Image (cartoon, rainbow, N blue to C red; front, side, top):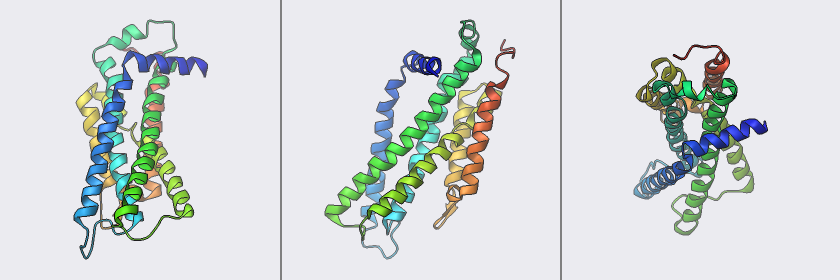
Length: 233
């Protein structure tokens, strides 16, 4: 475990992934601005887009999950696909480090990046919206501790599913050795789980989210299963 953590730290430093947090901050500000704009534009409408806190949190979750599934594809491209495409991975595999450990470290970084950012973004942005509403009272009602606890559990479960789903793009990316194919796949997957009509969204079905999350995990496993013996030339 210690060796794996060290590998993850080295990968983060190598690719200067700390710079991603600026992009994460910008993305969150855009999501927040859009949510606030929709809430206020719909003020006074007979059938507003977000009439309750439940609808607000659901809409926020959709935007956050979509954003970070696409972010994950960029990270996958940077950590994995680009190294295979440029063949720099062959040089990396010459070091006295198990290939499987190295690839596992890369995929864990992507998984944790998606997981943590979805949880933090939902909590922080949701709290800001609730705080603003406390003063302007656009959305009726209040949030009880029980409601907050239930929402927190939902956020954490959705984050786990989405982190698994974010690895699905790895399948196409590894086959095509293409950054653009990886990102396009992530966009299509994110669009799929966000699609729906009215109050229904495909991604809200637990069975669908769990299944897609497991598919992503299986793809991650298959991508590193034979990495010790595969010919990368």
